[in-house]
Image (tube, rainbow, N blue to C red; front, side, top):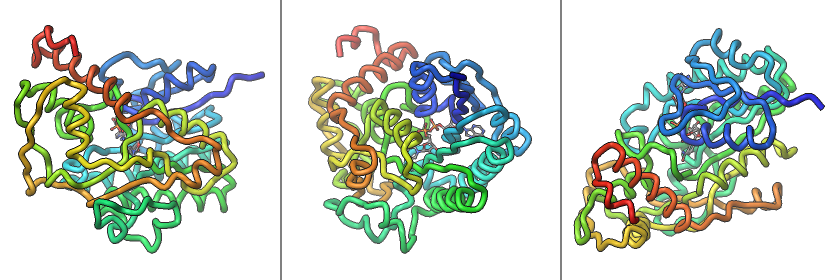
Length: 330
Ligand code: NAD
C-alpha cells in the first residue's frame, strides 16, 4: 500500500507539533509547515518547510503532492492576545485559511481538516458561570467572539462551500481550551492553564498570584493527547459538519489555581485584577454529538494533564534560570 502523505500546517506550534508526532508514529509521511520551528524540541516531521501561508504561492508549495491537510496554522493566543490583536488576527488568518484551502483544492488534496474554536459560540449563551454546555447547532444565530471567533466561523462556512461545490472532503473541529506540555507558557500568547502553572511555579509557598477577573469565570480544559487523538478520529470519520472537541468538566479559574497549587504542594493566595480581559463568563462543551459520531470522547483527567504540564513548565523555568534547579522535586 502506498504511504499516505499528510500536511500539517502550524507544525511549529503547540497542537501541530504534537499532531505531527502522532501521525509519524502511525506510519504516515508528514510534511510540517510553519513560519517557525517547534520551540522546545525538534520536529518529528519527515520534511519541515518554513513558509508563510498568508501567501498563495507558499500554500501551493505546501499542499503539492499531499493526500490530506490538517490546517492548524493561525495567528492566535490567549484571551489577552486575541482581545488586543483583532485586526492582525482577522487579516492574517483569513489569508492563511483561504489560501490554504484553495491550494488544497487546486492540488487535488482528498481531505482537509480545519481547526476551529469554541470562540465561534455566541456571547449571549455564555453569560453565566454555570453555563449550559454548548451544542454544535448553538453557533447560530451567530454572535461569535469579536475578531477571532468570526474569522473561525467564516472559515467553517467556507469549508462547507468547498465541500458542496468543489467536492473537497472537509472536516471541522471546534477546540475547547487545549493544554499540555510543549505549549507557550509565557510572553503573552499563553492560555490560562499554562499561565497559572507558571505563576504558581514562580511563587513561593504561602505566596500570592494575580488572577484575571474575579476567578469565578468557568471553562473546560482538554489535554493535548486527547486532542490529537480526537483530531485524527474526526479526520477519518464520515462526519463533515463541525464537532466540539473538548472536555465537559466545568471548572472556575479559582478551582484551576487550587488544583495547580495542590500539584505544586504550595499554599497559594490570589489577588484579582478585574480590569484584565476575561472572555465570556462561562463556557463548556456538550460532547453528545462527538460521542455519537466517534463512539469516543476525551478522557484524560484535568489533574493528570496539569501534573504533566506543571512539570514541563518548571523544567523550562529551571533551564532558563528563572527557577533554581532544586525545585525539580515537583
Ligand atoms: P499555536 O500558536 O501554538 O500554533 C499555531 C502556529 O501557526 C504557530 O506555530 C504559528 O507560527 C503558525 N503560523 C502563524 N502564522 C503563520 C503563517 N502566516 N504561516 C505559517 N504558519 C503560521 O496554536 P495552537 O494552540 O497549536 O493552535 C492550533 C490551531 O488550533 C489554531 O488554528 C488555533 O486557532 C486552534 N485552536 C486552538 C485552541 C487551543 O486551546 N490551543 C483553541 C481553539 C482553537
